[in-house]
Image 1 (cartoon, rainbow, N blue to C red):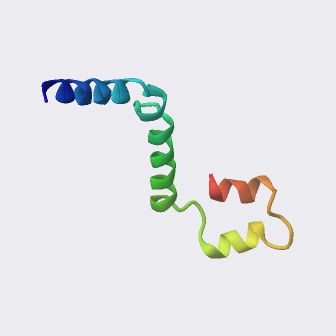
Image 2 (image 1 turned 90 degrees about the vertical axis):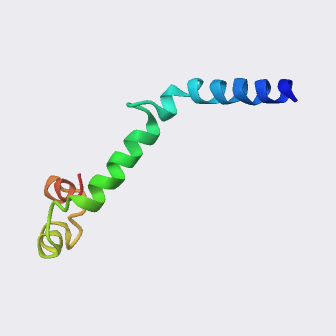
Length: 69
């Protein structure tokens, strides 16, 4: 049973240290969480402003993109 515990600990250490690009401070998961939280918290433009600058085929203008960055 001791070897089972040692094996589990070794695998846990390898899993947590082997993926710094995913789970680190500047990892992809941290960046995705940050982006999602800013989208939920920070609203750049009101609905009326979005309709004004993004309506009638103007979805790719700089003003419209600024509302969603």
